[in-house]
Length: 287
Image (tube, rainbow, N blue to C red):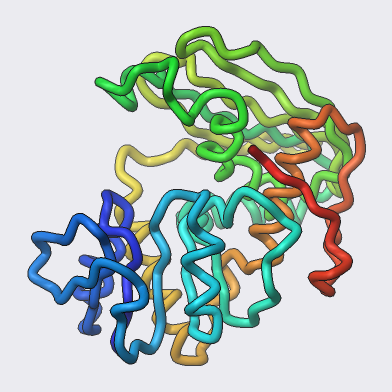
């Protein structure tokens, strides 16, 4: 297959190299060009025929970059975008939530399904200045709503694993790089909580689920590369018509954005079910 990768920053390069390693042809789109040794166009308008595409530009460009390619199988890096109100329905659109492809985490999800009366906690912490050295904190796009968007893996995992349906949010407003939030509420399985922060030195990402039969935990491995490789394999298989159910769908991506909008807006309820008609979807702009 011939695959376009839109945006060749760190994430786009990773997808391009993974797809090349799978034996497919890759063509890039990036105004800065690339040193990957692949054909590269400055704009999407310059693309000729391709069979599928990966969109790895900034989230505020995901929608505009997806529209010209919407008839193709698409993998869009998380988050899906910044709004829920204008996305066209697409049967072959998936969102890059790669932690779904971690085998140990998948086993934890199975255990949670087998013990449906439980509590669940999802945790992400990383120091913003360490993660983005040299970027003036005051101008960083990763404060406030950016924390929810960048750490939306935890929100996706909560929805995927325990299906939350109410939201209560407490937060420390961003002061320099110090920004943290705790989201909690009821889920189909019992209760859940999500901790996100830009204050933790180093890096922490884990999940814990407990019930009367015990407590099980997962800690993210030091490298996520295998999950990205598995995700790209699943995307290419799905693009060929062999759908991998682990891939996050467009509806999954919209659920995450709706959850973020509710958390940021101080709402106390969240419907896990999204209507399928795009004209009926309530608009929630995240930024």
